[in-house]
Image 1: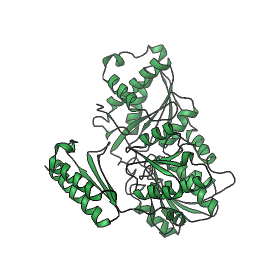
Image 2: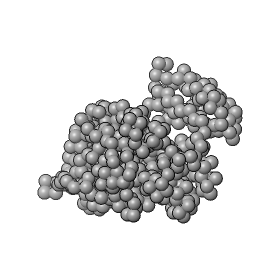
Image 3: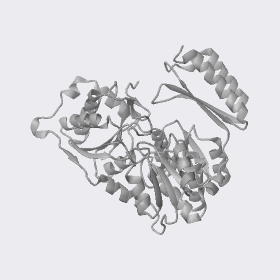
Image 4: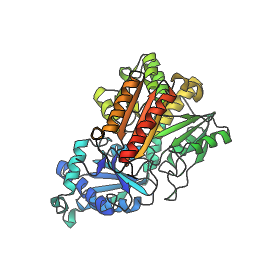
Length: 452
């Protein structure tokens, strides 16, 4: 069992276990040890988002890597997908992202990319976690003549911006579009406005003044209300909301309506099916995606494959099956023809290209999919106990599944990054769906809630 790594690296409250400088140092040493053992030398790209604790963890991580005789390339604040891109383009052996994504500034996290820009598989994380607590790794530091060198890549953001623009069709521009952009005071605060402006859009920026403490605070993809107000106030054609590390994106149409990842996958899949560019006529999504996406794809002549929650599992399934479009309802969208991870800005460019190519509004394009009523309730829990060991809860779940039959879905899972149990129910009848989810959530609160 892994104790540190969750569904998206290691996360926690900054300066509290496991998000401490000591753990960052040990993880850095382990990364260096693995690279030296497997590759006899090497380089690691290290980047971060804009939260205050990033400096503390960055310096500790770099110290650990260099102590093992491996060089470090520092890129500073850069979106997670930008770090994956720099890792591959610089032919580095690994990339490290110091970020807690959409979490508040008090949290932080560490996730690792392989040399080909992919998140590490479970078995590699398990190996690294095991090595971290073996004294032998700490004793394998290199002699003083072989200490790794840390250098700063000053043009990393510029390289990434050029790459992003290269994914937009060369015969199109964004001229004529007024776009509101909420960068969540995070890692995209320079990159995304620059890309959109250079492609010809009129940009209304928000969330572009990070101070270390305001990342994701009442802004970004986790708080789209801010963007909805911005779109209406400036009469924008659409709005783009990114999260703190820039790997997920949500949209707002010109009427102020929120457009999630499921809708964007449906819009892009329709266009790609019509242009014969959707490989095997398949989209890969998670169990959280709305049934409406599945129904829409089937009507269009495509199909939906589902994975467990986590963009890493979506990407793994895409690679296994040779698919090129996938993502999550939350806005992690993967266009595997262009990049190996979720990229909010790149995803926005793919959607904007369809808008410009078709001459249709976002509100019009999203009519391709009808949403099934869905209720999601998060219950904070004191422990992550097997629900089969709690008979009243398990019996209630089985009864609900029988009631829904083939008219809906019930999904109950623990969060991989927070002490929460998520109860999701969807189906044809909104009132029934809400009642089922609430009944189960209340029972879970009774038996596993923090107050019990």
